[in-house]
Length: 582
Ligand code: SRM
Ligand code: SF4
Image 1 (spheres, rainbow, N blue to C red):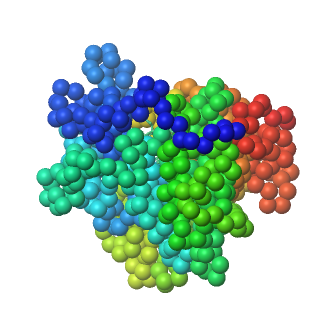
Image 2 (spheres, rainbow, N blue to C red):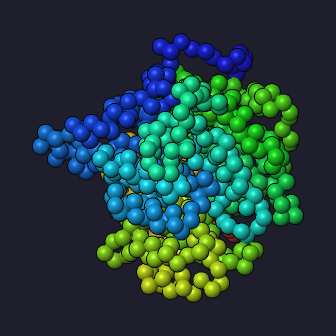
Image 3 (tube, protein in one colour):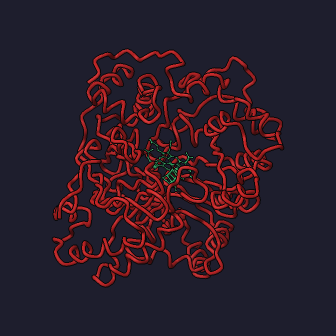
């Protein structure tokens, strides 16, 4: 364990390239404004593409078109992805209509509901980037800190009004989000200056500072979630910092504080691995925002700024130990955290269908395959949801599993909404098989620049093949978590799926098995570089054995561990250990 507790102060040349980019950026301005008006290219400069992330924007290119553009000696088909922050995942019907309109006016006619309760637009070209940002902000949503080395969208269990506790936890997630939002005036200056209604928000002071972040911001991205047991739908153990609501008599009496989770790793590099967060202690509701701030500040000061692959909080804690981390946080708090309180999670999936709220309203959770809202010839999901937004008087809640809750539907409105759902066939979505309802894929191709294989465009087909095997074995409605990503970064949290696929190269996937159904145990590699066409046959005998010899109520992930298809992963450091024996 590292003994020195002084924050390391490194000369800039020992730091990673991104640290220099931040250093000279003048609080995230760089030359973004100049790049936007340069019509000679559809791209921004390399440095600016790192800075736009802090503004919620990623430069991408259409990877399906790369070859033909290269042949035609054209530059890549550049466009931008914009991620819209939605703290706690709650948006109004008016905001939904605006997101829908922007998607159909400036983007690729789809909306992506992400694994972190945000909206994403894809395919926005440089010429309409600024206008898109103005329109997003006009809808009273924003994109600052949706990406970048800062605290990102704060997630929360999306179930509305089923108890007082749910309202309290949503408020906490929004309070933390507000408190940790960067203060730089660069965002308004670049995107909104001069636009009606935004003038008053511009910080004119050139001496502005970031009170929490400083000019170098954080070493790496930082993620916070709030969970309401027994649901672990936010996958709390996958995140840097989490708050588990402890509820007594229907009220939140405090939170267990979890720290040090993260998913990302690299193939073939054992120094990188997913880690599950650990409970560090307990805080009262009044202390929670302060705790969030201090945890983030310890990571700001001690996170590794020399190596971005080792810069997440999970490694800071793994290197120095939880006791050291807790002491450092408590010193900054000026008080001690309490002892962990008992809690129990039952699953990390969503609760589908209708739920009655305590306020007399109804809430409906719909399955949105891989979070992609779009119209196809046969299924007009986007149009149907738009029609609902036009009449709905409650809210829309994005879930951390890429699904959607239509919240607070009044008893009078329910038949009208049911009629629209029926007209567009959307009511059928949550009647899908147990495995499909627990499936999740990251975006991957064609927009993600890091993808090694298909994910969102392939998982639905693979699930169809596995569904057939499950049905043959009488398991059609059994909930089994299955997740896929196009690379090992872990955007759909595949290491917390009972069946996880991670892209190696086109058509090849690592197959991981054995995570806990409630998101409390990582899975383990079962088959390396499996060919896509072989996957059903690899899974068939395991599914057959599960149908025949599972114990009462035994989950698929627990079964494959008990039967030694894979060894359990006790800690992320064991994640890369050899294959289990059957
Ligand atoms: Fe992610 C990078 C998409 C959730 C870990 N992620 C990316 C980028 C931006 C690729 C890039 O850097 O160029 C992807 C854009 C694809 C596209 O075309 O839209 C991308 N990540 C996503 C989303 C949209 C996946 C989805 O299908 O929903 C999710 C957006 C969440 C949001 O609204 O903020 C998304 N990413 C996650 C998660 C899941 C989570 O946080 O619960 C993780 C794993 C948890 C974690 O952070 O450890 C995750 N994304 C990464 C990483 C690896 C980080 C690491 O520590 O190693 C990268 C690559 C990086 O940061 O260098 C990455
Ligand atoms: Fe892209 Fe990899 Fe994230 Fe999938 S997991 S969206 S392929 S970075």
